[in-house]
Amino acid sequence: MAVAGCITLALMAAAALLFLTWKFPLRREAVIRSIAQKTQSRVEIGSFETKWFPPRFTARGVKISRPDGVVLTIGWAAVSATYTGLLRSPRRLHDVEATDVHLVAPAQRLRDLKMSGGGSSLAVRYLHITKAGLDLTSGAAGHPPLQFVIHSLAVRDLGAGSAARFRIAMHNPKPSGDIRSEGSFGPFDGTHPLETPLSGSFTFEHADIAIPRAIAGTLDASGTFHGPLRAISCTGTADVPAFQVYGSSNSVHLSSRFDVTVNARNGDVVLNRVLSHFDRTTFTASGSIAHEAGAPGKLAKINVDEQQGTVEDLLILFTRHKTPAMKGSIDFRAVFTIPPGPARFLSKLGVQGAFHIHRGYFTNPKSRSAVDRLTSSARGEPKRLKSEPTELATADVDGKVSDPGAGIVHLSDIDFRLPGTSGEMDGTFGLYQKDLRFKGRFETEGKLADTTYGFKSAMLKVLSPLWRKRNGWKSVPFDIGGTASQPRFRLRM
Image (cartoon, rainbow, N blue to C red; front, side):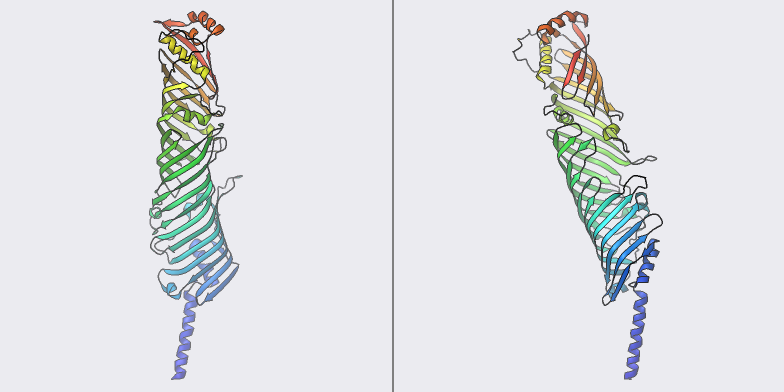
């Protein structure tokens, strides 16, 4: 009986060993075959070591390549399990660790990558990846890949039919900055993958938002996100301590609160509402940054609405001087369009909108005093001595703004009104050189000779009868040149 018992135990042990060898995919050939079948790839493994108690294997020099150009390399990986976990359905691994991971993939192929979800035959209790990189290639000659550097990725309960918890630290290439995020993902919807829920929080630090010959600044942002992959709702705050426009020597502290929706499949973004503030000006923005049918890249369409901002806040962004050329309050509404492509940002920028300036006035004493004296004359006040101060005259200005995308802003239908004076003008403003080119005409009841002294005053008295008059009002043509910081006014004879 004892011999029979020993033989029975030996046979059972042999059967168990055969079962383990067949059932558990911890052998080199089984691992290669399983990965190749699931990913339709060619699989290569350098060194491979298996341990059975507890079940575990380590691999070095792993390379998985697909015919479509997707290549995954892994310097070192370790997979451990328990026998009870391997007998479960889905099969459950205890820990998966990997380092020196590098994935190269054509950007347009990412959406075609197969994902396993609720119906997966494998679940992982803990996944930890360090020193990883993702290179997205465009296929265009001379265009380097977009490189994401993942410092650390940790995931718990992956593919277990419930929400997986994740934590990631990575470097984003565009805009260049450091991202940290944690949250939950899943359960994965294998039938409708884009319905898979995602939620969590993030920080985006030291992001360089510079666009050559357009803007400069470093952004820090934080927020939360939730929703299905097709429409992830993201809210939070962003801060740029020194936001600067190309060609200006001035920077402003720009802070924002944002509410956007992101499509994880194609990266399209809907700006539900972005509230931004700098100095004494606050404006809201909405719109989209998305692909359009038949067009390469993404087209940005952004609606901007500014109520009760200040003219000086806007002008300071476009001047090299510390003092803006004009002050006053402004309401501004416009649609900005930015098409994709390699052209310079300001050359591509399209604008269509309207503005209203309330109680605006020039800050340059020479320009301001001429306007002040003109309005004083229109009110019938006697000409003051040159040393006498004049009452500040302010203007209300309405106009339209457009830019077809050549870096030159067109301002049209501009109407301005001062006490005893009104007029209209049209012209252009160069976004690169900040140059002004305007022509207009104003009508006034005042005496132009009262705006200056000496020879200029005498000449204006001589020329005044040449200008057309109607009901006691003189109609005077003029030009505005120079730059935004140093405008030059000239009466046309």
